[in-house]
Image (cartoon, rainbow, N blue to C red; front, side):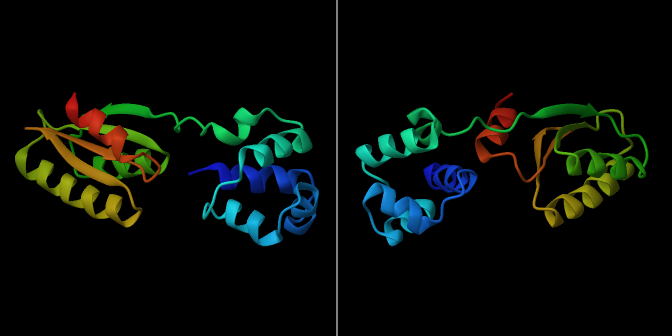
Length: 152
């Protein structure tokens, strides 16, 4: 869920404490806290009241933000040092397709071993998608996006 983050964001933007917002909406401070922690959802009339109070459309509270854009790079490594370039691209939030078709077998193994360790340390993802092709995703890319890449 995301509505809790949106409520908190707009409440803080309007310089309201949880207690102040609760008073304006006729609910307890604990209710506002539960909404912001996504432990419960506000009733429709409270969402409408908040949208008026925050001077926003109800959509801004209800519709989730779009997923982060994905920058996709294809990289064909030739030397062991190319592993650092791949890691750097992933750290810059780029999804990298590693094409090892023209990479010597021993160099490919060394590169993939190093990249795998480093990507896992930063919380990213690396997976094999074809015989000589791998994908590296930064931590902010959802499983759904990875599945789309695997399907291609």
